[in-house]
Image: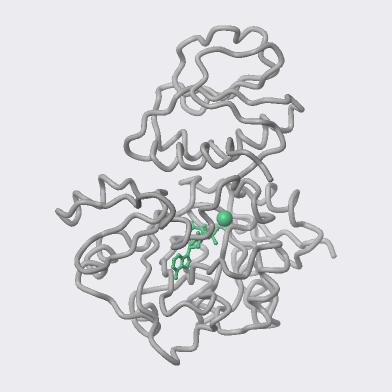
Length: 325
Ligand code: TXA
Ligand code: MG
């Protein structure tokens, strides 16, 4: 199988109709979202969800995010506490996933939630939202990459990785946010951060007036199994907080300050010359893939501040640098 690729700027209506048809056949479709490309399938159809896990080679104990077109749809499937409702009002549609109590018999299949009594929900922007509305049912969608690899931020990334396993890829251009959604769970009036992502924790604190609690130790891994070590792994080794470049290394740099040894680098990728963390997040996965493609044995990355979107960038970089099995 070689995936058909439809560009929404050329044939928006055709993309929508084709995607609906493939989803209706119980097959996954790769779709653009504002964060990363998703591998979307009917969240109520167990055969369709199974195909997501098979295509990605993803462990089945790792639940999927269910994407909705609007709050009404989300309320049909999940119970909102007052703080989660406020978060939905402030950040949806957008790069925030809420872990909520699943309504029993709501129709979302247990394979999508890995049998948990909770469900991860988000409302994406743009084409994904239109597609869910047209399809009429929630779409379970992990990132559209082989499990453990860097997430795709363009249709070409998806085609390179999964093109021979998919029927259809919708091309919506470069994903503007570039890192996955922030995942939070509200429990007993406390907002817990399960995964840093496209909404900065500081923004959540500003919108709610509440502290965002970071997980300590291994609870994060149990709650969000996608947060295992060695995730987002390129082929090359990744060396973090680099203050110099070794000869032959690829360099990923934030800001425009010179880095010692730069002249001997195999290639240099500037995440954001001005040091803008949103721009850096948008470029991160593409540059990791391109640095990897140079064939350099190691990728040096300069320090990234840990505030704002820097928290998500550092989280993904730490996983890219983690020891491999
Ligand atoms: O931006 C995103 O979130 C992208 C786009 C496609 O929407 N999706 C994405 O999905 O990153 P994925 O499958 O790569 O990551 C989903 C994460 C996993 O770490 C999973 O464990 C967690 O969400 N998750 C899903 N449902 C959960 C639940 N009920 N409780 C705890 N964690 C959950
Ligand atoms: Mg992923």
